[in-house]
Length: 315
Ligand SMILES: O=C(O)CCC(=O)C(=O)O
Ligand SMILES: [Fe+2]
Image (cartoon, rainbow, N blue to C red; front, top):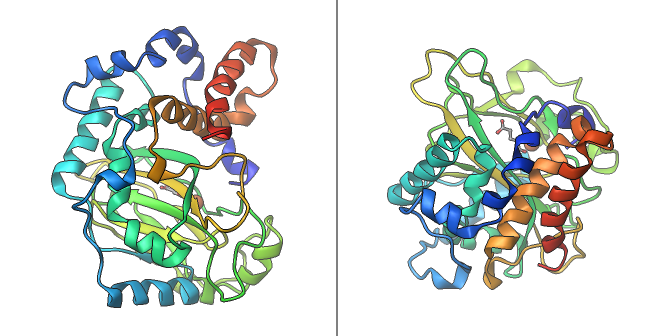
């Protein structure tokens, strides 16, 4: 995401260094949350994942090409969502950023419910680009999602057929509504600057009509996907919201193009504990980078994050 956005994410990163022994100990995470597992889960282990009908898949393709985004119905089973919520609760209770819930299995197991959708759009060899973030938006007037932006990390990720080669995956763990902060999208066919943004990542969004903004309320268990250049944001929550908005997001790319970033994950090969720590630290490093970069007191913390991230380059 663009630099101005990176600055907006603040985390109590310094405390992490003092707790590095806990962080690196898989049994610590198992102990504090015995109701969830940490295995080398791989996509092929899940047989029960439901395939969406061909008709629905064709609708997603059309909408993605025309409007730059689409959403599935809720496909993650309630029990798996409940397990994710428990993980998030425990991680918060133990004073860690919610990103650390990504050590647990359900956050990866959920991808098997998206397999047919992702394979249909990105091909069967699709890979994760591990730019993860976990959003926990408080049900208060202070809570808000990520400010208006285009993800715009990678140039020219629209193929000759008009289909993206990189997608953002945004997974709702609780219902997201206009009251507790849902996503808002400017469909690409309503955005006069969209085409420019494909080749110029700094392109703003200053020429659209307000009535063209679309709210995307979503049920828990839904996958929302968009390309790199659509303009979107997570809205402000409210003290009247009944529950927090919780979601997590990452990128996914075709497998038959060069890696768009320096790290890539093949879900079929599994995602072991070290890789999970790597992607957690990568997310925190990227999105907090400008607030901690290169100042002397932060060096040990940066070295710790970099050490964890090193596992990703060979993943
Ligand atoms: O959840 C949010 O508030 C913003 C998410 C987002 O912009 C993204 O994942 O690309
Ligand atoms: Fe975004």
